[in-house]
Length: 526
Image (spheres, rainbow, N blue to C red):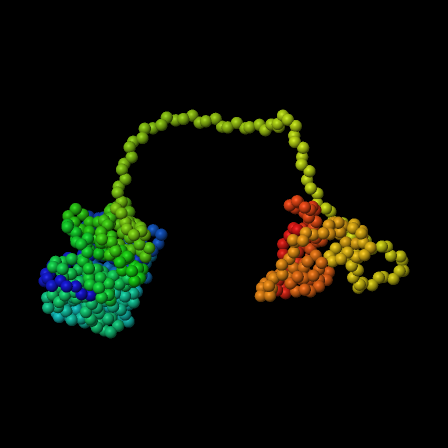
């Protein structure tokens, strides 16, 4: 990323220490709190943010802590504390143990100055920087094979520290050499091998403030435009760094502290939270690269300035602590594109009391009365035809031979005798067959016919049998009692001018054969 700004200007950068340090996954946080006693001693306090409501657990030791002790929460619930002891720093792990606090000593680092880096992306390791005469040592305090170990020595004096990936391999540092400050990237898997990352001009001082591994958004501070300004760019992009005018307030300073995650390959829609510091106070602000303005938000009472976290949905959560609520989390920005400042509601005017009103009488029961006129005659209800019992076998004389079980099928006594031609000698209503079927008319209109499907879609159509017992699809003769056929009553009689048939028979079962598979459909009415 390059930009043409040949002006040479330097400006001191004020470093702020967040009042609350949040773990990499946002599950825990830690801070130094003060007792309410007269001495006002300090003690570590761990916050749990992953539950339905945040709560704090004090991690008090046998003696009060110094105000310059540094804390780093891990994702497993333990808190790393770095204390100065004479000419060295001691690292320990604090964790709740019943009513008290457990402490595990990790080791000591012999250095006159030691600065904790932001939490590693995996949430299990802790790093620190120790400046030397011409180098800067990078220490792994927790997460290695043993205690604290020095893993790299980087030429120059390094400050800052921003993680560029989710694996915790690439670490960006602001290195000062020959009177200029440039941002370099250190590869921890190659022993801390460094390479240039941010160099706007050769004479400018360029520092990296914040980075988002998902979108590649970078927040920088540089004096390349002529004076110290905030700008943004995209890691790996050929486009130059841009310095929006909205990030240059007339009064006060803007300092980024949280960036919205989960915006893969969308850096312009990634939201950034700032801390706005003026002579009148401190409050949060929200900005997106796609917008050309900074939205100022009201700070919750007791906000721990410089701390907060974004959710992937676009909600900004700000921690606060007051006397009434020592551990709280305020939801100040919703998942929309922007967040408007919340104006305080106007107080309601006093309302005059209303005189008591006598209760109303309960409703009386309504008496049901019959109409004075005569009741209308009831409509006749149609009767369903009762099934006709089959004739019983004639009585058999004593000693007479028993008839054979397997007899030839007699079409005259079959209940399906109405299908096909009527046997000779049988009159309508005679014995054999169902009477209501034999009384049906025998003529049908000429326009009622069944279409034969084409040769290509014949397999998808059901094979429907006509009243004469012949299949119109396969031209096969149907026999009574054969499975896979269809049962239809005799043709209906239609009269001229009549919209409906003269006699409507009751429903009969319909059997269809779909592709050789037998299935019974619902009862249809013909």
